[in-house]
Length: 248
Image (cartoon, rainbow, N blue to C red; front, side, top):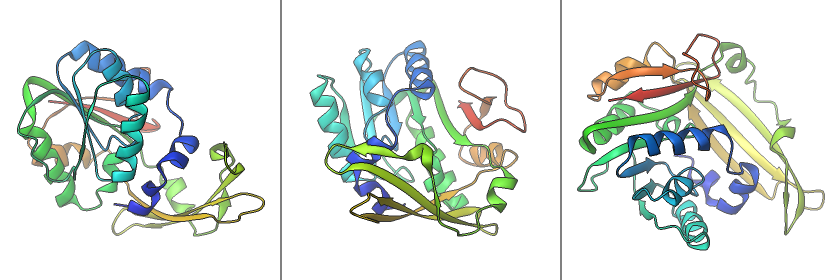
C-alpha cells in the first residue's frame, strides 16, 4: 500500500496541491447526485473537503493515519465537517449506505492483486444506497511509457515545489515495470541543495488496462455504465489520458 510514501502528508500536499479539473468534476458530480458521500483513499481531503463545503454529509476513508491527520486539520481550519475514518478500501464495513462513492487520483491502483480489486468493488457495492453511483478515475496505461520505466533516476521538474521550511525541493523518480504483475515499482527522492534525499520512499502502482476493467467490476457486482476519457466529458478512446468510470 506504499505507506512510507504517504507518511509525509504536508509534503504530499505541496507536491500535489489541490484544485484543478478533477476537484471540479467530483464536486459537481456529487452535488448533482446529492445525498451522502463517501470517498475511499481520501488522502488529505483535497477532493472531499470542497464537496463537504457545499453541505453534503461526507465520510473519508484512508489507510494512512498521517494523511487523515492532515485532512482533519485542513477541514477544521476551513470550518468544514467531515467524518474521517482509518480503514482499508479492500474490505470495510461502515454500517450504512451512501448515495455517491468515489475513488480519485489513481488511489485504486494501490491494490495490486485482482482479488483485492474485486474485494474493494464488493465492499463498495454493499455501501451503495438504491440509485447510488460509484465513480473513480485511473490512468489509461501507455505501453510506451511503461516500456520506458528502466530504473534510471530522473528529475520530475513538474513536481518541484517550495517548502516553507526547506526552500526549493526537487523530485527525482526511478521506476521499473513488471509486466507479469502489471505493477510499476518506483522510488521517489526529495532533495534540497543542502539536504539531498531527505525523503526516499517507495511507491508501487498497478496498471489496469481498459479491457480488463469491466470484468473486474462485474466480478465485484458493479456495472460500468459510462467511461470518459478526460475531465471535460469526452468519451473514452484508446489514446485518452485517463479512464473516468461511472458505475452502478
